[in-house]
Amino acid sequence: MPSLVLPVASAISYVQAIILGALQGVTELFPISSLGHTVLWPTLFGWHSLVTAQSASESFWLAFVVMLHVGSAIGLVIYFWRDYVEIVQGLFRTFATRRIETPNERLAWLIVVASIPAGILGLAFEHTLRTVTAKPEIAAIFLTLNGLVLFAAERYRKRAEVRELAEREGAKADGGRELDTLDFREAAVIGVAQSTALVAGISRDGVTMGAGLARGLDHQDSARFAFLLAAPIILAAGLFKLPDLLGPLGAGVRGQAVVAAIAAAVTAVFTVHFLMRFFKTRTLMPFAIYCLVFGGFMIIYTQT
Picture (cartoon, rainbow, N blue to C red):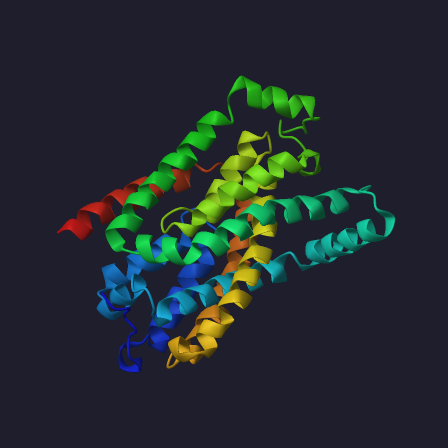
């Protein structure tokens, strides 16, 4: 079957772009899969041209979705800009001293190591997984699975071996280990977990937080590492996909993509501020329940 390239007349409107941008700014950071929601919401709203574009092998949709993610990454950079400045400075210090001496220097290299598997797997499988799983019924199934993953992460973090690991690495008052006590092997495993977000319905931050919890981090540090790790990968993917947006596939949607990215960035700033406070005392359970309920509902809805 030939590739489907949608004409400009069926492209996305500015109203749709703003709605999807705001949705992205929330769902990218909440552990409920932004990609899954950008697949499912057009189905709920009856935006049939977008539903068709989602699973096309060639369409404006993939380039538009990448711009949504770039917007949320920009929001993360705005919120964590002081952290990123210290992390980048720490990284360059290690080049000069050839040693890792401070928490920020170690955090910089943890981010680098965790980004490597996600980057490699993203280059290899991103297009295939996005087009294969970007169908409403499949995204609904994986969103439900995402809820089960979050639920399992909360159960697993309570196991004795996880508590012993945190204590062995110097647990804080809340029982979690310090973020900079992660070793590079653990960071690589977290990076592999992050790459599962290439599947529509699986949350990047959800699986990254779950992997962090499994290694003894508390919820706030798991969320912080997930957010700090997300922005470089997303921005790199945005640069990689920029030619698609500037080429024929971006015809008729470039302005909408920019507006959507701005909406995503603004919404993301407020969302990450809320979540960093939320995870001081709360868990992933509300998001697990939401994914199970909404995912289950959409499985039924897409079959009717």
